[in-house]
Image (cartoon, rainbow, N blue to C red):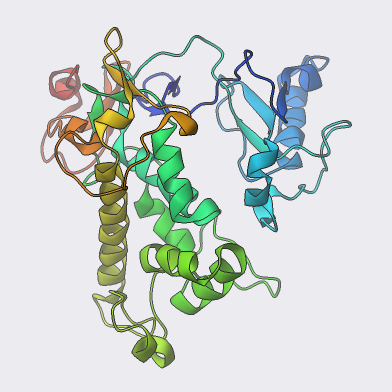
Length: 345
């Protein structure tokens, strides 16, 4: 967690730092060479868009980020199998990049820990771990947690009640529920894809096998079809046919609670003893997987990652040049109170 977001956004994002001391099957290549010959802003934006569309799923939204194509090590290649968001986009990859797998943010500056200006947000952690669960199943979530560094002792905020991160689970739910949204997948017939239990089991079984698929679907499916409900009595899923006035709210809130419960359970299993504490930066650093303790991944609440998470109830907004960028319900508070209500650490 060491890639600061844009100025005034106050979020510490997940970044990748290439390890020059190791030789692996993989590598990375900057898009700076691809666009360096284009001088006008319009040309550079168009070329950057072509680059970003060449592989995977995200657009370049912040020009200050250094985005890279990252070749995935051979040991992780299986994660990419049949993933539509890892196929080449409409423009195709630049010459020599045909086998690139990931397009990601690589910090351009030395890694820095979360701090009072750029906090680690719980909704961002939630979103990353949802993606890990979908992509690699339960085991991959554990590996993501254990091998990630800069878990902050002092600047990790629980913002679930009033999300700061634009792609928080509250927003992602819209995509999983097949709602009209720019990031909702579309089926071949043009209809919007919806992650119901039956759809989830079908898709995830093909990718992860039945047992792992059931773990994924018990967390991420938005609802259950009535004709299969008797087969899964233990799953806490609302009916896809519910259409009462409160049905949508209930569906969304139960989904958010399942996601939060799953993430908290996995974080609780990650004992602080699994990490190396960096005294200078006051963060817990992930370890190489082969250096992790060979013990049962059991649930605990004390001396686990969630014990580091802070509430910061008064941190309700961001400040931009003295004006309030509103988040949540602040009642009659004024923009002039922005700095007073922003907690610095």
